[in-house]
Every structure is written in structure tokens, then in C-alpha cells.
Length: 617
Image 1 (cartoon, rainbow, N blue to C red):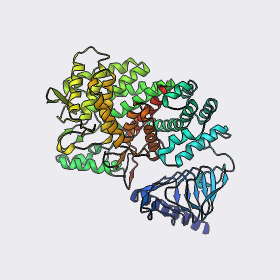
Image 2 (cartoon, rainbow, N blue to C red):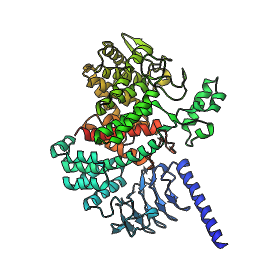
Image 3 (cartoon, rainbow, N blue to C red):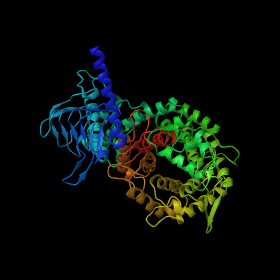
Image 4 (cartoon, rainbow, N blue to C red):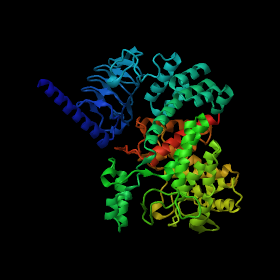
């Protein structure tokens, strides 16, 4: 009987701990891993709760205190505890401290400065009393190497590399990559041994072995530092990509979307004749941190844009590694894209798998958009160039007929703006420029004289609407005059396609102003990507992903920026379970794993980062 009571008490205690975890994460907005455990009377800073970050499988014991603000100095900052750490009874972690992975903080310790990984600290102020330890779940010391170790008996350089990754990550994210580059001076041979121990794919290793000193200097550093960076930060990306692909492939790329509320039979019935109700329902479902879709009868589906982004990423992975499995996925996704084409239009085009109601128009399910079609087109052209699959080009070329024939045009002083879809007349700059960019690229494969002329007239429209500081409004109607991050990135990426084709050189200075505005106004020092130019929240996976895509191809001047953005995205937006989060707000993080908005874009972005860093060496 007593055993039953003890077991019941443990179950109830765990239940209350989970409820408290939910309360701290979803009400206060703290960044606490789902597998972390925080004792009931642990004190976490509620003055600046979003500054609390606790890693997976860490344990905070009774009366431990973690602070993220200093009232006397008026400072609010981030305090981080790594993975599989233990913080003892009565320990105090002061604001701004970063504790590495596999650390034990002794009872009553006062931690005043950063703690390196794999050690025990104790005392006031806390000092390292033992190094080289390894902990398992909840900070329990592992007497024998666990499966989570990178190798049972790792090469000494691999051990130092792991310390570089976890130790620098425990500091402020803005210094992760730069810190790793400065931390160690590996030889070429030891860096490659690290990469082998860390499990980098064979194709990647072959690229590493081909890297010499002169090639590394293209990135402004020496060959050892460059290879160390590939063997370190890139390894995290490869492992993340493998987990993401496992998650997405097991789902057959089917998933929910932030804007799929009108796929609900209930919402369609209630709001059938009310534009306001349809818009309100869409925003309610999108903004809810709890996934309401199963309750509303919303089914998962294939989103054509997501399939195009996955095709884009697999094509780059195949070009980097020459692994047949990626090529097989390319063929499968080409089949899917062919089946998902919108029917009844002049050329190939793609839309969304849900109805979409705006304040001006209703776009029924399957209505093709210029944005989806252009991005899929770019993916198809890159697929053809990287995999030599003729079918990709065959699918891409007829896109010109849809854009030239089926879209409306808003005309202004000899220029014009393409409409977003065939059923509206909205003039949106990123949509217009993306359409111009795919027409420009198609001139390489088609002798239709209309392509270049039309693309340049479309380009001139949006360039006339660029502001003196280099920015654009999303659109120029009264209710669409905002400046956001990822649409700015779309604009610039589209213009870069046109400039790279040797066209419209007169707009290169305006392009440079746009790039400078983008880099200077949308990112914090630690790599956070702001949603708007004048405020931070919400931090959206789209903003991070598009920034990575754009700056990865913008040259060495922006390499440090893109490195910081990648590090931040992996640290704060990746679940560790194969999917990325949707948005991070001031108080709440929306962790719903959307297939198009989050997974496909993050996958595309990380493959672009690898391709930009490695394939062009």
C-alpha cells in the first residue's frame, strides 16, 4: 500500500511540475526545453522572463535562483543554462551568465561569470573544481561514456572541437562563430579527423579535403580556422538537416499552414458569407499558440510552395554530396509539383492548398500566385542546373506564359506592376519583383523577346517606389504601408537575379542601398532577426530563413552576419526533434511545426548557407 502511495505522490508531483513548466513557458515566455525539469520552489526571474534559457534535460533543484535582470544597473540580459546540467540547492545564477553543457553547479554556489562545458563549479564566487566530466539526464555524472558522446574515445582535437561548439554557444550567441574561429588553431589533418569523428557526410568530407590555404583566404581567414569552422558549426547544421528531413519525409511533406483556417468545415459554414468572420478566424487560428486545427477538422495537406522549397534544398544537397538518395527525392518532388499545378491557366503555375481571404479579395484554393510560381520556378531552374534533370526545365519554361498572359497589370508612367493572382489587382512589390526575376532567368532558356522587355518594365515600377533609405513598403495602399524583414529580402533577392543576368545595371546603386538598409535595420548584434525595421517582435522563422538565403550569397562582407543569424536560429527556433518553431513573441513562443512556413523555409535556408559557404570554395 505504501508503495502505491509513494508512486501516486510521484505522479502527482510530476504532473504539477509539468503544469508549472507550461505556465513558465506559455504565460511568462521563458525558453525552457520540454525535457528540462525545474523544482517547484526554484526561483526564476519574472521581471525579464524571456531572458531565461534552460537547455534540454537539465535540472534545477530546490531554492536555486536564476536571474536575468539587474535592478541596480538597470540591465536586462539573457541568462543561459546548457544541456544536461544540474544546478544545486540554493545556487544563484547571476544575470548574463552562460553555463555550458554538462555542468554541475554545487549547492549554494554563486555563479558570477560564464562557465565552460563539462565541469563542476562550487563556492562563492563559483570556481571550477573539476574538469572533463560528462553528465547524462538531469546532470547525473556518467561514469562511462554515454551514447550521446560524439565518439566513445574521441580524438583529442575532436574533444576540443566539441568544447569549442558548446563553450562558445554558452556565451552570447553573437560571438559563437567568431569565438570558435579564434578559440583554436587546428591543423588541416586534425580538423578533418574532427569532421570524421563528428559524422559529417562523405560528400562534405571530400570538400573539406579539397580546401587549401588559398581557398580559405577567400573567407578572410587561414585554412585551419576555416576548416575548423566547417567541421564545427556546419556539423550542427548537417545533423539538424538530417533530423528535419527525417521528420518531413516521414510525414511525406504533408502538414499544417498558418493560414489554412478556411479549410475547416466549421469555419466555412459559420463564416461563409462574412469576409470579416473569415479574416478573424484565420488570424485566431494563426495566432493561437495551441494548435486548434484538429478540433476544427482542418486536414494536413501538400503545399506547392513547400514542395518547391524542398526540391530546391535537395538539389543543393545533391550538388554538395552527390548522394543518390537526394537525387531520388528530387525525382519524387518533381512528380509532386507536376501533380500540384493549378489547372486552367496559360502556363505552369502553383497556388495554395487552402482558401485565402484578404480585405480586398478571396483567393479560392488552388488559385495560382505569382510568388509561389516564381519561387517554384527558381527552384526548378536551380534543380536543372545542379542535377541535370531535363524535366525540371520542362516544368519551368511554361511559367512565362502564366505570368505574361494571366496576371493583371497596374500601369504607371510606362511601367507596370504584376497582380498577385489572376483574381485580384493588388500591386505588391515583392510579388512584382519575383515575377520579373523569373522572367529574366527564363531568357537564358527561351528566345521569347517579350521576357526581357516585360521584366524590365516590371522592375522599373518597384524601383520607382523604393525610398531614399533603400526600403520599400510591402505595398503602397494605406493599409499595407509597413516595412518588414523577409519581404525586403525577397525584393533584394529578385533584383540580384536580374543584375546577375547582366541587366538593369543602372539600378545597382539602388540595390546596394537596399542591402545596406536590410543589414542595418533588421538584425540585432546576437543574430536576432526583427520582423519590422522599427520593432523586434514577433521573431518569425521566415525572417531568419530569408536573411540566411539572401546574405549567404552576398559575399564575405556579410559572412559574420549570416553566421550569427544561423547560430541564433539553431539555438532558439529549433526544437531538437526535427522541426522549427513558427514564431517567438515577447512572452510566448508558438511551437506549432508548420510544414511550409517553418520546415521548408528553414531547410531551404540551411542548404543555401552550406552551399554558399562550401560549394563556391
